Amino acid sequence: MLRFRVPHHVDLLGSLRPLVASTQDPTIRVRPDVVVRASRTPDGPATLVITRVDDRVFDAEAYGPGRDHVLAGAPALVGADDDLTGFEPRLHPAVARAAHRRPALRMVRSGRADDVLVATILAQRVTTREAARAWTMLVRKWGEAAPGPYGLRLPPAPERLARTPYWAFHGLGVERSRAERIATACRRIAVLQQAVVLPHEPALERAMTVPGVGIWTASLMLRIAAGDADAVEVGDYGVKDHIAWNLAGEPRATDARMLELLAPFAGHRGRVVRLLLSAGQRAPSFGPRKRVIPVDQL
Image (cartoon, rainbow, N blue to C red; front, side, top):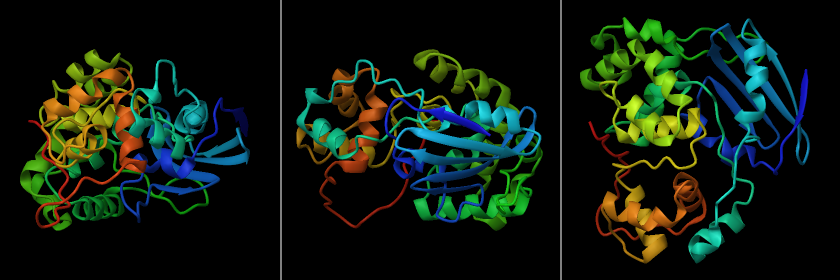
């Protein structure tokens, strides 16, 4: 058992939402006061349970060979390392309002590229529903029972997916291109893990040396795995419009315009994106509703 204190109040549901790939994700359960998560570590599989004791105190316990590894990372997983230094929400009224509405939204850090890599690649070029369904089916098909009494499943081992032929993904609704990107990225998982411990720009550059990992995939992976508060999902279908609408009243924008508007928040651009997506105003729609997650820049 590990008891630890975090420096700020944490909204577990909101902060850990990026780690939940679907409403039926077999690898994780998050409630307002508890999170249970199955993962793989260098020491073996583990299940981590984090329970809120009071406003800023949590207890953590774990099961499996990777127990010590996940216990060491438990504080970072709930945002204890989130550094707000330099973040000035008052630079824009919309950001100030969002920060006021979501004061406990934290940038969490899983510490592992393989935690989020496959789910992120699955989300390329498809709707959120399709990506969620594919992830759930993939874990149920190739994952294993996680340690402990909670009935979770481990995400499939990267080495297993690295040698899985593309046609084996067809039953999951995953076409050849995404299947091959998953296999290629899993073969280069060591390179992606190296990126997790680098500063923002070198991390992006390192991650994007892996075929199939563009700026969109790399940014989302690093935001979660590295807790990178500056990572912005360039290339996203709808995020650029959402940011432009909230920061400039412009219903449509390019990625370049989005980055221009986010420039005053350098170092925390990803934080601003998360806050505005969570508590900002939805950009107006001028056509049929589309729920497609944008194409990665490959």
